[in-house]
Length: 83
Image 1 (cartoon, rainbow, N blue to C red):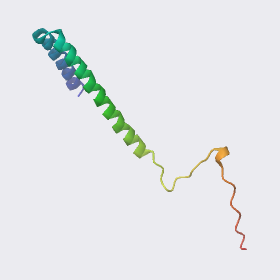
Image 2 (cartoon, one colour):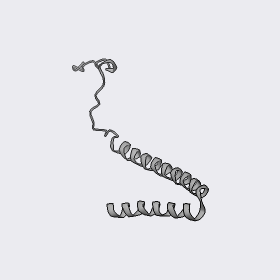
Image 3 (cartoon, helix red, strand yellow):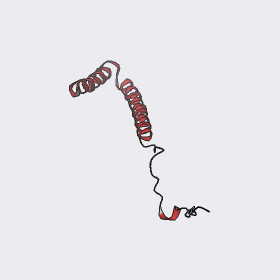
Image 4 (cartoon, helix red, strand yellow):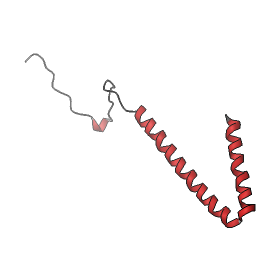
């Protein structure tokens, strides 16, 4: 699979090079700007997908024991000694 990714990245550089030769530096600048924008948007979507996946995995179960910090402890409940 890594070979496929490397080949696709190589195709991007080949196309950018051809674009510069055939359409000039202005077209290359606009295309690189659009490409960086698309790459950033894609990375953001992937990060959000990953965060949702991690959040779903980390939700506590009803049977989990809750451990509280010392300063957030609740007062003990009175014992029911058969009143």
